[in-house]
Image (cartoon, rainbow, N blue to C red):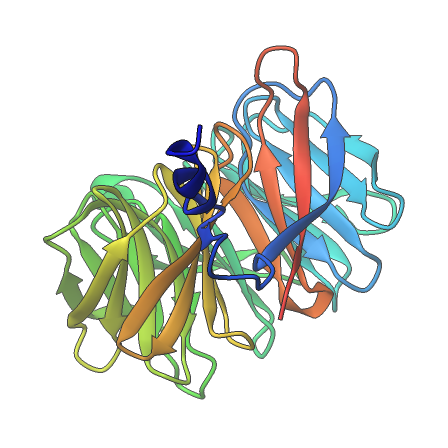
Length: 334
């Protein structure tokens, strides 16, 4: 027993050496919201920060679950969607957009009554959604192979007003906020990051990604001109410089990842993985990133959502055995 004692207190828990680091973990679990009856794979989430509503995609269940974060419970279920994937709540319009992958459409639901307002079709395998508030346009990643692209939807009218062609399914994409800013798109089946000029509606350059495969999530540190992607083969966090597209750093990443977020205020990254952990990284400077914690979540919990204004990280955990699907709510420490 005495020989085992130093091993016990020299162990690592949640990424911290207990014998040397009394500082609190970067994420603290403060709430668990159960979603009984939700089966199978979960997909993206979105939030109404003002009214504190969380929208969660039950992809395999064919539902969108609406959660009251103050009450800590589900208040509504939207059904009749074949395969809800991407979700995006647009506050200035009070509309929830849902990308229906199997239905090949984007549905718009009223944010008050939850009634279907309109549907925009001809978008097979619809997935991630982004909103440009300046132009009031909704962008949706869709399609596969030569039929893949970013669809551009007039968010007020629901009409499909343009398509930017891609070489493979867009797994994630991010906008630069500066005027004339670019769009960065992960295209893992094509083996590159596509850089798009939204004004010209075309790819201006492709950055080859050769050292990692199956790179799905993406986020952007625009101030430091750094782009982050998460890969599954191998499990890595990869960092790119956004002027040249050069990969400047890689760090061991969360296993089976599907979401990745940059916390600009704390200079951190949160990367959720299906192995049941959120990996947390500290940005030492623009070129150097240090793993600082692995926070336990649940098997299959690849989906997460960081909401800076609420100081929260939400993690969706699918049902496993007798344990129902749930959303874990983590408070983010300073």
